[in-house]
Amino acid sequence: MPRLALYQPDIPQNAGTLMRLGACTGVGLDIIEPCGFILDDKRMKRSVMDYADHADVTRHLSWSAFQAQRRGRLVLLTTRAAVPYTQVAYQPDDILLLGRESAGVPDDVHGAADVRVLIPMMPGTRSLNVAIAAAMVLGEVLRQVAGDGGETAIPSEVGKG
Image (cartoon, rainbow, N blue to C red; front, top):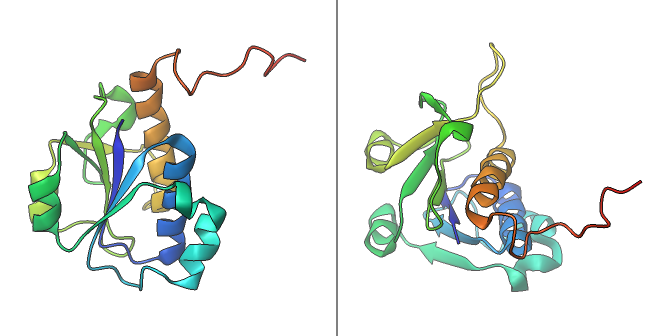
């Protein structure tokens, strides 16, 4: 399965939301420290709700510690990319990397990505919330790598009306 990775996250609610997203989709989450908050922050706990026990979260003390342990292709979501996320052929072991809400990722992290993708936006807009961006791209990744047969299949009764 693919994974999500947060590079030095700033906002606890986004980390909690992504933990919940991972728990609900069966996708692991890597948190690359240092964080801009304490990982047991009550705002994060409120966002993750009771899904924390179902989340596969791995903490990495630094970027280099994450790099030493990572397996799979690193796909960076960035406004500095030229390729829309819908035009990439994803692989089952891809890691979707999201930068800091306040600053993205530094140039060395940007350069370490194997693939860089963007979410096309309307002119004059800067960026999406990282949890929203992750959900959009993860949806496309899962559509491609999960196919139409596994746990993500929709029962035939859904949508009849």
